[in-house]
Image (cartoon, rainbow, N blue to C red; front, side):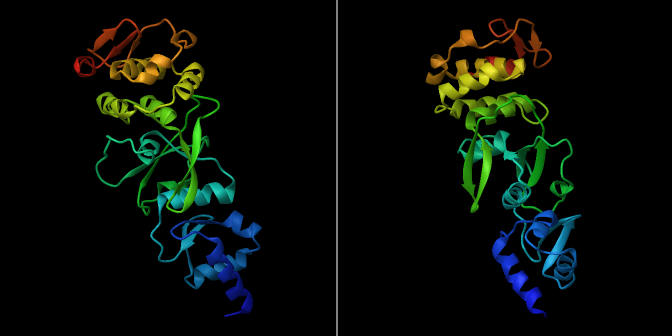
Length: 254
């Protein structure tokens, strides 16, 4: 084993994150040649996940740590979103069957292939949205890494955006009941700037129904909900104030 091989390998183990990924573009910037990277794979130190994507052999890949590696190494701003973000803030009702899901908001037009691999502790579920131009986010330390996460206010609106394909409206209302500590100023900013009328209307309906104090702090006159009627579900109940047809069970729930 050459001195360069061993020295660079030691550096690599220090630079990398346990249970995370190495991206070849980043490795090359750090001084690792294609030949040296190939030697690490051939000797069993690194295993290939996808073209240009590797991990330390034997690691149990963490979706969260791997996402942090992707952001840091390739200078991306992919964030944890929707119900996955709400879980990190302590709000949860939605419990998917099987392997846990990590909801990811990504501006990329093509989802990286490595995210589709079934070797992580969570299943990546990626969605793209232009619901709001300037996302309301936070940086959170999770599993020893820092990641960009949708704020609770935005995360819930992302859930509404993905209903009813990804989420059930009743399940989301159960979460809304827990959202007693949302920040009225952040909610106001989002509702004034979000382009999706369906999200704005059902959010306002649920918030009012839940009776949260922060709802009374909103300036509804500054929130444009449009004038056309929207049907969220078939055979539902029409709510004239918000011009939406909602599930009967949601209307009847007390």
